[in-house]
Image 1 (spheres, one colour):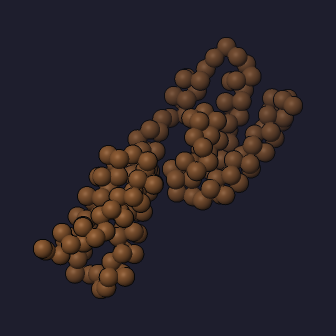
Image 2 (cartoon, rainbow, N blue to C red; image 1 turned 45 degrees about the horizontal axis):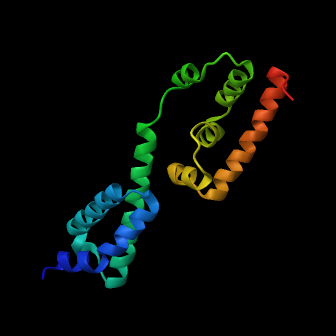
Length: 158
């Protein structure tokens, strides 16, 4: 049995489970497993020990999963003008809140948009943005505070 087959047999399940836990999608996880072992094949000579191999495989899996999540995010981005057009309604309050959200700095606007308009949960937003859950909760909290200020100052909302 060659070295690649041996490594795939020994660590393939571990890599797959990690990819599934990140992506929650079997097809994407299978793609990640293939990519991980292609990278292993191309870098086999650089890996010094069994311990190093395992940690290397885990790190590569995590990085590829993050890249896949970010790719999803970038593919599903639309312009602010498109958001305004899609969200336009006859309801003055809805439009006012949307305008205030769009006035937020990007670091607050993106988590607020994902949470309230796209219905993502905090852990999902953390994965998409590559940040910790506590960081996302903090950004959401600060974003809400900034929204209150914008709405009070510019739109006389209470």
